[in-house]
Amino acid sequence: MKDQTIFYEERIAEARQAVSVAALDNVRHQAELALDRWIELSDQHVRTREARMKVIADKSARDAERDEERTSAMDAVPDEDAA
Image (cartoon, rainbow, N blue to C red; front, side, top):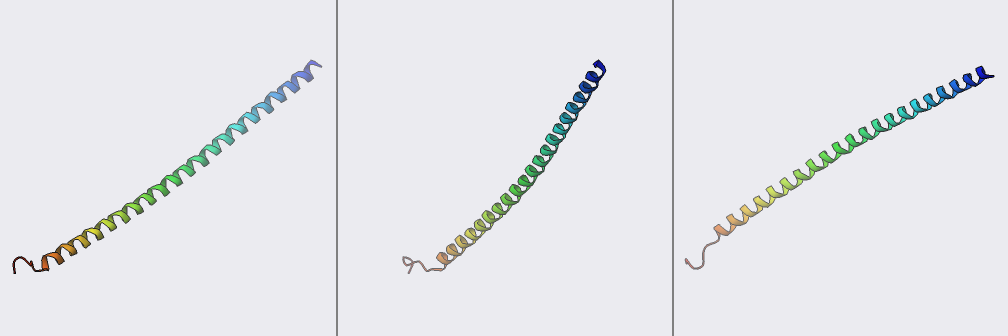
């Protein structure tokens, strides 16, 4: 009877070990998936930020060009006091 008890205790210990290993593998796998998702989101954020910075730079360039055109147009208008 003792041999049988030892046998089952060993099987239970092996089963517990297998469950622990499986749980750790699952946690490891979930961590890898989370890291992959974080990297994907980080890359997406960088692309979005770069696109936003390009839009801002383009708008600034257009605004500067528009201001230059206005300044040129004002310089071309004759001064009424000088006439």
